[in-house]
Length: 133
Image (cartoon, rainbow, N blue to C red; front, side):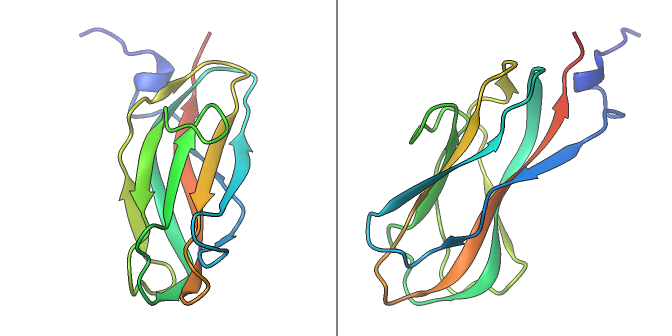
């Protein structure tokens, strides 16, 4: 049986990187970016999710989060819509487009807000492992 490299192994040590908290109602179409990780070694991302830290109320309509390697990019996860009426601690899974990230490459989250008539806070987190050389 072939031996998988550490980063593909089910025994790899997973780590979490997370963004700052974002107020979902910071203005319709208003964006905010955050660098959540820039590792000196290549990493593989196993999952990404939006976590609700403030209960959401109202229609989230165009509120989204995406993850990329450039400001406003979606190379890692395409824009994922925030969901209506979510309780604190609930999560929304994001779909990975690309999971390998080269060494010294920033991993950036782009938050796009909604009108000030809704409520709620979120952050985005990724679960990753460092690749062996």
